[in-house]
Image (cartoon, rainbow, N blue to C red; front, top):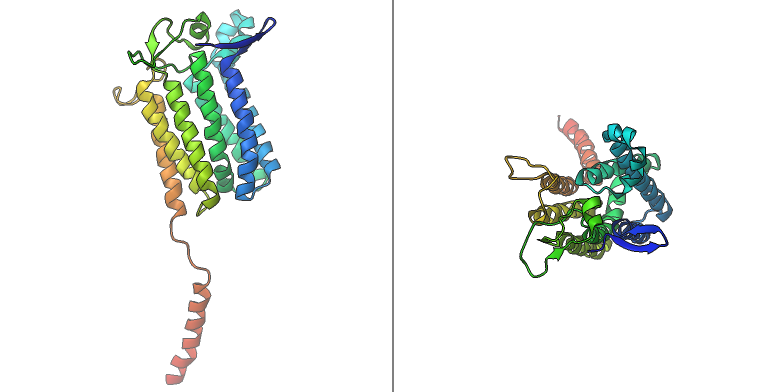
Length: 283
């Protein structure tokens, strides 16, 4: 494939970073529309996204520096190559940092967390679709070896250097499978967003559908660096996918719990107060 999208003189533009950045830009623009749909100030949503993205990017790279501190002390110039490292744990910790920053910002701005989650559900999955297209070009999170006709073969040494992709071996284009799944999820969420019944419904459906997509596509990914659980029955991303599904289901269950009717309580109290004199009269 093409880990380098193009060159500007001696400057290399990596495909993964370029496609991921383009996906983020489109997701930010889409978030302005979804924010209006749920009745949130688009400017505050924009600021929240910028704070979250910056924290995720900086936090994940600082974590890489800490983990590789001994090596970087011996080879300081390697720090400039940290931006080219793609790993599931880096993405996971970046997502955690970004979520924490978004939550803090939303609390300080007194934004409704469930409305924010509904507004960002479709843009996030849309951005993930572009990120997986970039991963396909770069060889990041590559698929397992296969003989299917639509297999991809990586031949560029940079794909092996930056992402560890195997060279000359046909593998599943699992990143394309994931991109199609996330794009489909995003379109469905956009269609149902204007007709959401309760706050948090869209976020709940997003978590569940994204979890299913991650769990299923992991069957076609190479197991290198993804960890194993339960004697190899699950890998790390699949375990995280199960957590996403459970979180989405829990969110939906909480929202669909019956709410007390504010109009019946005063009527009942009034009825009780009206009955009191009657009982006293009979007495």
